[in-house]
Length: 182
Image (tube, rainbow, N blue to C red; front, side, top):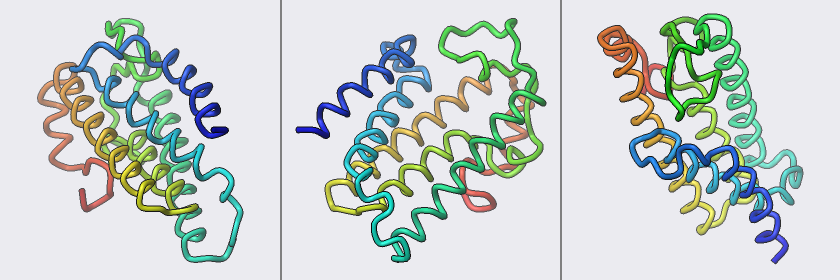
């Protein structure tokens, strides 16, 4: 019962952040909302196990994924602010201000991963899952990963609309979320 209460309270925040895209199935934010909700469910169920058995293989793999997730998040946001030049001229009510980049970013972490922020959410999902893996939470983690993958696909459509052929060329020399692989 406690987990449901915590989940419900924190979900209100996610709904507040996502309200602009909840009814737009063609927006990447629509799919991101469901990924965030599933990620929240994993966190609510596994936060009690965050530091249990600190040297177990699950915990070591979990911390590796969590730290890589944090790196991708920080590196991605910094590059978006510095290189992407967020602009008020990019009209889209579905984008947050920092997402409204006016220049294509193809350096730093973006050289290897087109979607470092969404990739960080996938790594975060699996890092949290490994804190206390169960069959039910495996299903939740898989579903969250699918929603974040759909988020990336719809974000790519939006990027192609805005950047055109420049983004198509960029897609040929970078991977979606696993450097050099996928």
